[in-house]
Picture (cartoon, rainbow, N blue to C red):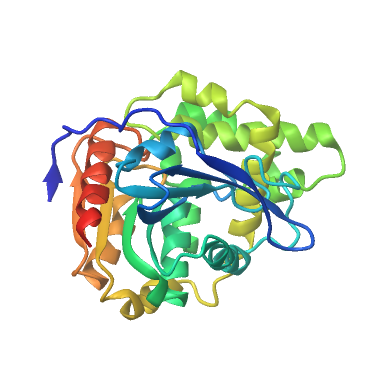
Length: 320
């Protein structure tokens, strides 16, 4: 299905509740509640990993209908400690989502996730299918070695060769055969200056390739040292560890466990960060989910066609 953009964001809204939730001896998660306190619960899972939440993320949902819960994952955004890699895995995050659900006294909820958020949403739903009312997924990322190689080694480099040259700069020629390993070495280096140089280059590569039309303002946001460090360090940590999955294709291998959950898959046709092949494979494995290809979009959730399709999906979930 190809969609035509016609839906704007819901109006800007402030949280009616926010704070920190201690999820382990080490980690404290920042959270927000927005919308209707008696409404249908929905949890927003941000991208990255390491990306953090943004005020616009509150605006994909009808605030009169939904009780919207957003949180920064371990080491991300306002959660502490910032950029922390210890006790930070996919399964730690899946456990955190369950702890938050219990903390908020929610029986089950709609789960909304894009990019890495789609990975985490699928992992959570496969692990706790009885707790998921519906899945709304965008920019599908199955976190397989082939996807990591495409974006960080060779593939996207042929579409954005100018930006790729900037991504290469911190890495000596003799280490460029494995860019993720080379970056991990620098992002975990004892020298803070080396860590920051690598973090900014890693983060700007993703920012510059995330939209159909490059947004200089979005690229500049990734230049913030604290944001760049948490984003790049945590992403590289997960990708170095195969996202902590037991097999390379674990999500598709376990899709039968979510087959009865209502699902919505939204994918930009020209998504360079998470190419449409992964969304297509998920669609073929899970044909019961509604599948939307946005004809004129890249990776970013806020691009007009993608934004519209996501809001249409969350509106459809109101009656579930």
